[in-house]
Length: 303
Ligand code: ADP
Image 1 (cartoon, protein in one colour):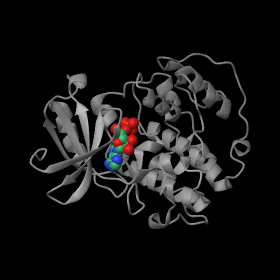
Image 2: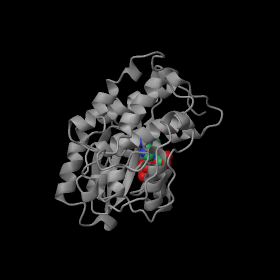
Image 3: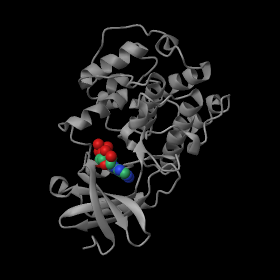
Image 4: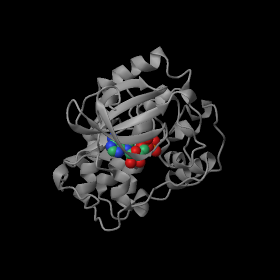
């Protein structure tokens, strides 16, 4: 009855980008886990020896703000990835109308997000698909990044799936211009979008197509000048846009502190080479100025 001689399968938790996720009990540790079943058929050539070796690397990623990959094994033609079980996610927090997020709470959520990112970026692992429902929240209030490195192993999620549409809102301009040599800056841009979403309590840049997404970005920050982003013109899908001036960031985020706005503008720098890194973002004065970030165990969460 046990899966892989170890896991007691429980109810279905949901369906995601790569397959279904179900709850299970790990009989070895007696802990509750979430098992992600990845359909191998669909990613036939993807899940080869290299993929399994990369998954082994993901198992080595251990940080309080990264969801732990406990185990990985093939079973009945599916690849099974076993993760620690998480109570909730940041999307549920942001959408819950009964939850008030104080400036200290927002600072805490962003700090934990950036800590997880900085740990992985230091090891040259990118997330590539950051969005609020990938930021899971543990019973002790710790925020943990989920699905690290999976986009690279299994390919970009299939955009035909409707639930994937939302990932577009977090996509960096260089990805929308078709760059093939993206770096950790794509995750920092996405973290900036999540920071903005925590402040606004709604997604910041809601494009309805990839072109429209660029339009939303340009409307918010102005069209990038070649001096701001020298390599822009060489990107595969680059197209000239009609110039639009940038409104002040202050007018878009009237409630944010000056420090918050300064960090936000550095995370939304067009040129990925000039964009702030996750580590330097953590060192920004926003995290030193009052209010101090809320302790994880005191953060508000959905019932
Ligand atoms: P997506 O690809 O859309 O981000 P996932 O495949 O990560 O979705 O997850 C699908 C569903 O499974 C999620 O909506 C979430 O509710 C649940 N889930 C995923 N990982 C975990 C986990 N570690 N603990 C608890 N629930 C999880």
